[in-house]
Length: 100
Image (cartoon, rainbow, N blue to C red):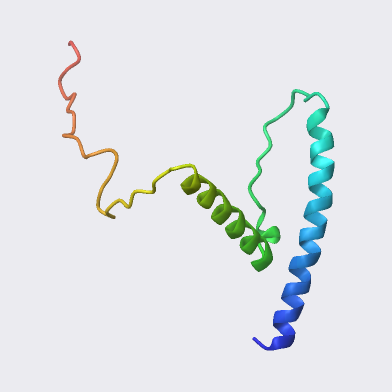
């Protein structure tokens, strides 16, 4: 990437931040209004919205949340990659369990 590409990306990121700040202000106003019953809303990003800038913003938010968690005395435990929460079980056989 050239410096020009980097500058364009930075400009896009700053423009998105400003737009997000405006949307956050609108969202706060909507949060004060009573919620209407309706279908559940999926807050996942659509593929068209996944940009380098949006990912960078997401990373920065996560870093901030992690540092706040650690500042409150939280600890992060590293778990080995081969550890699972649900160990394998012996298969159950129900062959022949029904009455004739």
